[in-house]
Length: 120
Image (tube, rainbow, N blue to C red):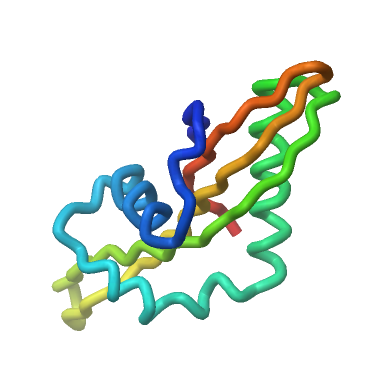
């Protein structure tokens, strides 16, 4: 998970832009995300996101850090064509997490943005 200083995403549109940049996707319309939005409505994905956020923040700021996040899930589709045996068009979905976090470390407070693919 990539940690970027500052609050870089404040809404779904900015989160989509960040996820597309992280995935290396160019020229994809934001409306395509709506087709796959239901994939992120799984409790298991939310749990994995919480673990990934907690691990990234603790690794960077220590075990005593506390945080509050606003997060967005962005499904990024990739198309593949297989011509072996039966020709198939395959749509592979990678779910990206974009989280804006306020991290508190003893006397200090910082805003960060986390972005990366979620494995589930």
